[in-house]
Length: 510
Image 1 (cartoon, rainbow, N blue to C red):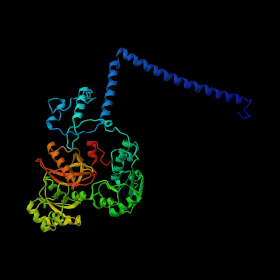
Image 2: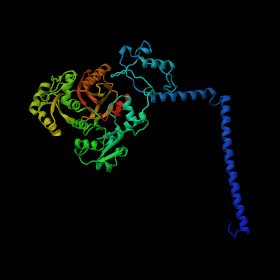
Image 3: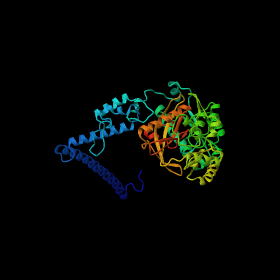
Image 4: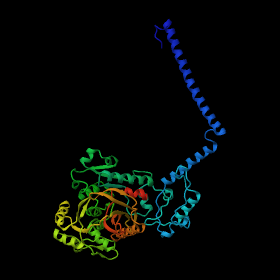
């Protein structure tokens, strides 16, 4: 409504005229913009038509070739994204016989995209790959790498863990897990299991997680706290008050009514008391049982098991000792264990003279660069022995021959509760500082394939001998002559396991 003083006045007529002029000018301006856009679009269409006809720019054949190349590149990327590793255990001379007489040439080369890359496999190559895939059998040892579509693996549908267990005749449903760890270990576990849950059930929250939280974790606003479904406050301070406190972990597991506990790495992950107490409370431990953990988690005991399984070992204070093995059960008596230890600097020096210098003094419960010293002459032995005793109080100590210029290689193991065990390639962790790993490489290529296959078979033999369950890592020393020696077995998932996940396409925590 117009003010009364403006109606009928000259000023009112002028105001109305200016308003109408502004409206008309705005409409005209919008019309010009619309006309320009329409003209520009028409010009571009006519330009493309003229280009096709006179060949001055991209011709019809070039446009079609570009489109076809884009489609091929997209198809190649899809194949790579959906691919997985398949292992073959045929003899070496039969590895590539599907591709011709020359077994070293591998599959036929794919056509080039003109820029040094590969666009897509030719029909002949794809047919050869399909034939090779049909002939391959799953194997524990390294072999032929093939591409297989993930869609071929899962030909069933389940909506919950209960349905999954029922379908595969399982014995225990796990839909709530306590993570007795913090930091990257807890984050990696939740991410991996939720990824598997989404792929399997289309619901990443099908498995719920309970975590333990210290005041320090809360103050730092740790990432794993935000990812968990439920958290339980625990005392702060050293890990003896929280993540390494076995009684506290079991109490939380019982009160929260979880079906399983995952300890990750470090803290209580290698304490045999944890799976023992959980088993008494009908709670699953995601890892090996207490007997296998004790037999392989201790460096002295695992070396005795390795010698019993005829796995090569370096000369050490327990060389030649073997455990009692009946074919189903292995027994390491306390007397046998004590014979592999050295209880004093004098006893250790005598063992070192028998082995030959230089030697390594090692604590059987040590790790992470602690509880290990190199001794090159007898005069330095007593001081180094006392240093090892101080770093790992109460731990048994043994003496081992020093391996010069050796590489540190690992074999990733995966075993189930039914006695089956496989290896998932290996890793090279030779780049270290102060006996701590810095860089991990996968797969381990420094060893000859035939030698590394022997290392894998030996690792699987060890796991089956003690009834190992879950993921574990067998560590070897590999010298330039091609000989390998057993070092130890870690009865847990290691922090460097993503290297194996990348080359094997296996979700290890899940």
